[in-house]
Length: 199
Image (tube, rainbow, N blue to C red; front, side, top):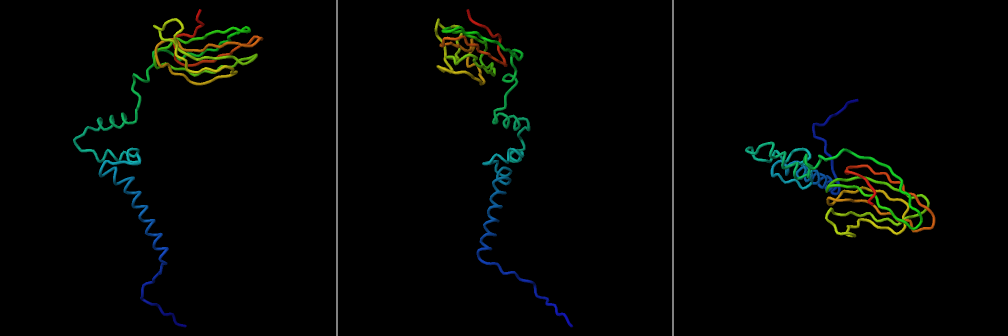
């Protein structure tokens, strides 16, 4: 038996649809590489944000620019909080209290806060639903003048977070509109100067 070998190169024939798919795939990869890597480095243009994430846009900056200036501009564009924004004047407070509401009566609980202070809260009524109005008053407000944030006629629970939009007192007014006593249990945690019941 004899074997014959050919010195001719092997050939593969591809269908026109296979060639079209291969070309389309190559174009997609080339486009992705251009948008994700080349444009951020060469032109400083980063339409996806991926280049800044990897630090590629800094490569396009001129050599005369200070690295701290570039880093500062990058942080500013992300809205990174400053020390002044992060620092708070008070320690974290956490309190729980029960507010007893006889039939057809209402009570207020307020937190004295400065603008930007905030807290998270949760309350629940036992014995029936209550009318609730979460509101705030500025220090120079006239009698009966307030800003209402949230009002419900009949509610048994409430929870959320609150950030004071101005200096003043912020809190709740609960009213028992029923004929039986109701207790409201309040849990609050955050930054405020004091929690009190106005007289």
